[in-house]
Image (cartoon, rainbow, N blue to C red):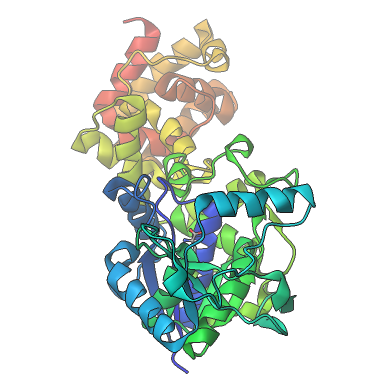
Length: 466
Ligand code: GLU
C-alpha cells in the first residue's frame, strides 16, 4: 500500500499546537513508511477562511519544517466534485432529496428536547415520492444511511469503536444552497487524494462513523483511521490561551526553536522508551502509530522550556546570531550593524549556554549593542567600588600591552591579580559589571576580545567617569 496522509486544517487565523502535533504525526508517519504527506486547506467557512488565515498556517508549517509533498489542495475549489459525487449517490439510490421545511425540523427538534432525546432526523423523505415535494422548496440531499446493524471502526489508536446504526440519522450531504457539508467534503477529498491513513484529533472520532457510511455508500474502500488524544492544559482542562501560548507562531515569537517544539510535541503523546531528545531523522526512524498513547496529554510549559534549552545549546551559532539580530531590532528597537552582529556571533557559544529561549538569548546580548554608559543592575553597580575602579584603570594600561586576544587578556588579568594579591574573581567581576552592566555574562576575556580595545576602553572610561 502506498502510504498517503494529509493534514487538513481549517484556516481560523492560527495553527494551534494540537494541530501542529497532528501535522507532525502525519509527517513522521509518512516519512517512516516512505509515503507522502499532503496538505489540504479546509477553507469552506467563507467568513473565517481568508488568504491571511491560510498564510498563517502555511507559515507555521514552514517554520516547523513540515512541508507538504504536493501543492496544497483547497477544499473550496472542489465544490463541483463534491456535488458530482452526490449526484452519483442520488442515481444509485444511496442518497435522497429531503424537502423538510425549517418549521418541520424545528418541530422535530422541540419534540426531541421535550422527550430529552438527542435530535435525530426521522427520515420522513427517505421513501417519499419526490412528486409530493412542496413547491418552491430547495431540498437538501441526505445519505440513505443503513438502519440495521452497526458501523465499526478499527481505529489504529483507539482500537475497535462501534455505534448502532439506529443511533445515526440520515446526515445531510448537500445543503439546499448546493454547498457540501463538511463531513461529505472531507470524505470525497480524502478519497480523491488517495489518502491511506486519516490521522487526526480524537475530537473527530464521532464524525468517523458518518464518514465511514459515505465511503460504504460509494463503495469506496475506507482509509485507515487513527484518532490521537488531544492536548490538555496542566489542570486537565482543554488547552486554551489562559494556559499560555497555544498558537504555533506565538511560540516562535516567544523564542522557541521549531525543532524543540516538534520534539516536545512528539513526546507529548508518543513514546519510545526513555528517549527524550531526538533529532528529526531519529524521529522518522522510530515513529509509528503503535507508540501513540490513548490518554490525553498535558501541556507542560516548563518541560518545553527545558527541551528548548537543550536544542538551543546544540544550534549553530550563525543561525542563532541571525535570529538574535532580528529579535533585537523587533523586540528592543536596536538596529544592529555588521560590527555588532559580528560581536554577537563571536560571543554566541558563551551566550547560548545561559539562555533557555531566543527571547532570553536576545536579552543577554543587549549589552553588546548598547552604547556606554550602560544601564547597570543593582548588583553590578555595587561591585564598582572605589578600589574596583582603581583596578579597572590600572588594568586598562595592562590590556594595552596585549594583542587583545582572549588568551592574552586572560594572562594580563591573572598577572594583575597576582601582582595585587587579589583573587581573579575580584578583578573579573567589576570588569564584567563595567563591560556588560551585569554580573552574568559569557567569560569576560571572550567579551573583551569580541568588543575590541576601543569599545572596552569606552565602557571602562564611562564607569570611571572620564
Ligand atoms: N478541518 C478539520 C479541523 O481543522 C480536520 C478534518 C480532518 O482531519 O478530517 O479540525
